[in-house]
Image 1: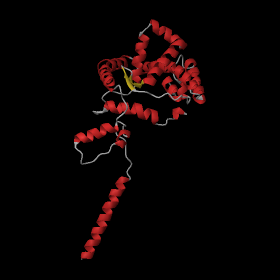
Image 2: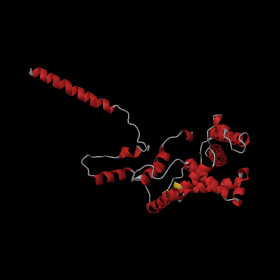
Image 3: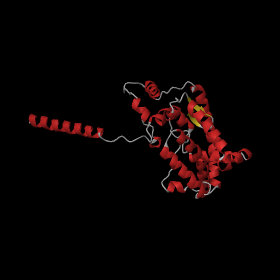
Image 4: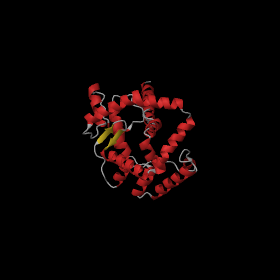
Length: 265
């Protein structure tokens, strides 16, 4: 009788161990906000109290940020500006304009953005991308009626973003300190300089005479800003985390510059 009991106990233990082992093979699904990478560095000891756990979390998200005091103030300003000004304007824009008109506006400004994309692709010696961007400009500016329509994407030539910050990185210029720009959001010293160069180049080229017209009609710049925010899905506070600033900083500083991308070919 005792032998039978021992055999049953052994079988139960083996089955329980097998069940636990099967759970280990279940693929881990990402968090709803998509931020799983910072937690890979997190060492959690069940014996830690809540304060020590939060400190460990902050260490996992720790990024070189010598301008943190300034950055946090600007981040808070951007949060409130987005909440009180930008998003209400975007909501009003969405309410008063039909979908096809908003799409045309977005296509038009994206077509203008392909000019610095081409410029920076050439500087980075990305031959295939340069040819594809040139083809996009030709197709969208002619067949697409000054870029209001985007036939290039439908023909297998999707828009690919390049900027002078990426060009500087291509030549080995480090990103420098993390920097949060008013209204524009996360950046760093290199990318901020890149924004200035891209803006200067676009103004000098004056493609479709938009830069010159914008100097006389600042409402074009306002519309472009509203459209840019309309196309950006990120919303402040959407992470529902006390570490939102750290997460955004981590993603911009680490993931955007360390993750391989097919665009870099």
